[in-house]
Image (cartoon, one colour):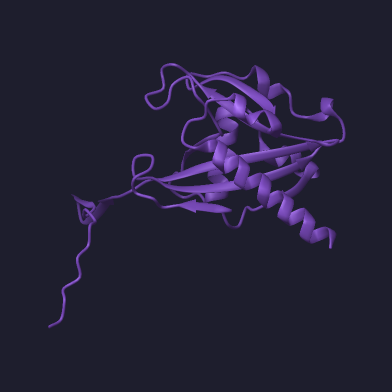
Length: 186
């Protein structure tokens, strides 16, 4: 006897618009980790969600958002960083040590997490020779979604209450950075 496969999926909704069929499907979320080093210290840029956000208000997170039509994951990352922090990544290409613009370093497809999103996580690593060269203008940026922005030393991450398990993404990115630089030193 041949067993019929059993799937637990729910079919995507189909919408007819004129002669076209449009499918309603899971969203692709973009999560960005910026690591910035000066001296012996490594920092990451985090933001506090405003109290009017429907998900995790008042918690800290990484700059993140959704992939829009006609953009790559990395283009979405650049846009989200700019929209949420005013930091335009291409302005700092001269400080760039590592950038995985071709492929996310982590892909999460767990359907039980974060409203069925597929999350693509990117890492950008900068080297700043002096603390004052770190992009500090972002600290004054606010909008309806963001209450506060901080550069936080990695050693201090546990002091913050994070949304969406973003502290795990930061740790993964930091471990990847160590791996990359250890490999390049050999």
